[in-house]
Amino acid sequence: MKETKVAIRYAKSLINLSQEKNQLDAVNADMSMIASTCEQNHELVVVLNSPVIKTDKKINILNAIFKDKVSPMTAGFLTLMCAKKREYLLPEIAVQFSSQFNEIRGIVTAFVKSAVPLDDNIKSQIKAKIGVDTPIEFKEIIDPSLIGGFIVRVGDKQFDGSIARSLVELRKTFNKNEYIPGF
Image (cartoon, rainbow, N blue to C red):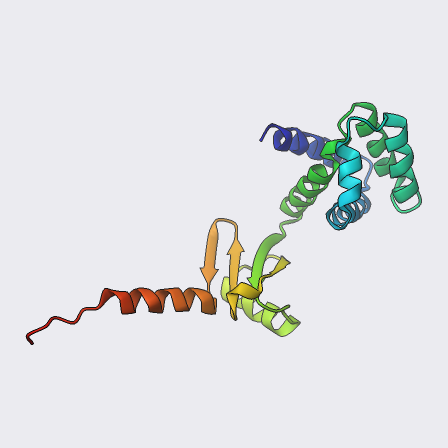
């Protein structure tokens, strides 16, 4: 919880700086790349969390991975985070940055859990059912245990149209057993 608050503050500071320098979109692309890189490479997260690896080694590792791929502002931010011994927060800061960026741009994030990947037609139907006029960013989670259908969560609202939920509801109905002998 404490790390999330710190990550939110660092993300907000980076957003403010990138807005001042008119580089918000470039830094957002960089932070999205950092978030996806950390998500896909557990070893990188382990290195960032390791107290044994020295700061200069971590800076060299981050420079080797991101130096030519990110803007100078983002590269400076990565170096600053290592110098302040906060490099372990980078994955969370990247996620919080994207969240705050979407809030600034008015983009709604819809988390969709489905048994199979969704195509564009299904996404447009979901967008129509949600009834939001603003742009929607879909975050897909594949969960074969749903059997079919999907679960959509936007903000604090959730729609569960999965077959697994329907089967649970059907099981509850059968377990009620409203049969009364003698009628």
